[in-house]
View (tube, rainbow, N blue to C red):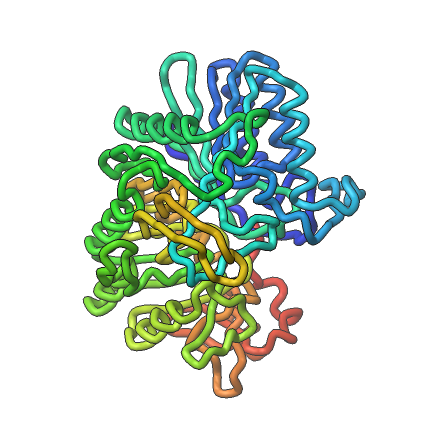
Length: 486
């Protein structure tokens, strides 16, 4: 089976019952439906599991004899604020009224427990991660520390012994705005199958079945044995139970970036992995952007795209703030000094990938220091406002999934996807404001129409070789050349 890459750019901001990435979910369900007769087991590791469409499909598979195992987080990790109306796609009729991400998940969790079907099991991975007591941690979801499970992965076992592993940048959850997302499925090699099997085996052993979960770590004490994650190949996972796994994947990513000779594209929700310190020895690490900037100095073109931004003066330029603004300012300040590095921002970015020549890296994790840090943490009576009095023992590590493939076709698809997002009217391009301080809104204009768009006021970007206009109020004039949404 050739790798299958599915891409989605949002076209409708409504909250639908199919979740935040309806197109990707339909592709996944269609893939599973076509091969259901040959499948023996399906494993899902999902950051959030509140999508009733996905739940009903997994229930149907279980009823036909396929063993389905889902790993997610406890209910207190779901947002019980911000109630929303959910709509049926196509009819725009109200599907559920005044529901929260939490209430939707609660209904599914209770349904799985009520079914008591041995072919359909939900397990909870309740490891939380904290680096030090002086940091603030989100508590809006009813918990005091954040859960570490961030990957959205699928592992499919077939009756003939074949396996397929995949990931998606989307949590496929209901109650979130649609974003630009991706999904990648690939048939395993013996080596990649071994890595995925190791990950899910250990994830399950450190998880608790839904009926048995009673907050087994009330004192945030996570003593767990670690295993060797093996060689970083097509599949790799980071987790607190995989020794030094975030460090190893970062080293592999730096190696791939350092070997690029022609092009580098980086896309993620948040970018700031540059010059940060490790947990245990406090050694300064250059991060993947240290390697990126070195390639820029060698003359390699690098294009960056993210959802968050702040300039060196602290101005958000109407964008969302990065998780760590200070780290981001260091990154953008360095990027400004390199002529071959461009940085753009779009509010819909959530796909995470790197293209280095024909090597692609797709991931569930962002490219920030928190994704690449690993180590022992010991805190007594934390005094930060929202975690006051809490003690913590355990390994710091996010749980994420990375897939690395060398494929010219896949690289081309991701670059086209990158430019499709880049060309959206609401994309902000750092450093390309005109004298009046307005942004550039790029259009897809064929050569035969160039005189027409010139008369309408469009300008030519010789570096990008693309026409643009600078006043967002003129979008109607250029409607027929605006990028088509997939």
